Image (cartoon, rainbow, N blue to C red):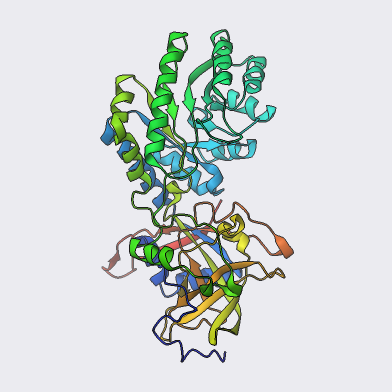
Length: 462
């Protein structure tokens, strides 16, 4: 390819970003280390693809439920379905006893088709359509009401319904949620609406602050107690999502954030903010921190209140990755140093962080592994848009990539895979591939038995 890599060598050059290797689960290492698996899938599909490992979803649900049990409270997990459309994820939730948070008739029917029962649905979103409200009530879903008009439309249906009132947090500028005045009017309406059962209150906060969630949860407990004085049952609160995911090691993240430089990025690109790719208390551990703050768990127990959570990204942590094929390479120079500029067979719409004025930072892995010199590398997409870049920063790949190699972007199941997918240029949307541990097998005529888990096999998602 003619890439001038000798001057770069094993040491990181001034134009190369610091490495941000991703944390990998055992199943991910197994898939990546397999000498044939990913290459065979790429050959069979002939396009980029997403990989999901459904058992990891079930494991994370179990970890959230264990955090509830350890705190001694009644808790329920609703998977935020918007984070990934895969039927296999909703199926894993159904098998693990989790519910699903939906915001459209499409999501609701898909959840039902995956085995989620009506009572296990949380129905959220602003100004829900009449069809969504009708379908949710028919199946007995729990509806998070965002405005007074929704209550009036529910009452007009003449069907029994279960609701929570979504609270606008103090000082929040969000367009979602109800003000104190709205809540008072809603409670007065519900006191005279026999067909609507108030089950409690909910909120959603931006960011990943455990303390803020715990403190606002206490306010919702007080709202439940007030509602009970009006004869309304109010026995559930939801603190929504926002449970962090730990993508990279703390030392690597600290070095990146302390020294990030425009010189590391193609065309001097810069971003104002990044997702916190190192999160010291992620997922279920963050839930434990919320419950432990200022005796929240005890308050929930004392008042007989159930806690609901709606994780999306956190429930999908380490449950999947995305694979692209290198189909072009060129050498560019900046500040007198060479770097590799790749083109892959897909678009950055399959790594959605780029479309939120940011960059997906966990380093992609180059497959197959092989010898070579560390090579600063940027990754572009197969479209005619100059800004369509999967990785603006010059990633220090362990060798120069060649056409036909695969680039594996790790931990992409949460939002990255399909929240912005598009068949732009008539390029096909990457399919989802499911990996499963292969069952035990015995060679005919031999006493040798291969135990389960020593290999993975694949199929296309639903």
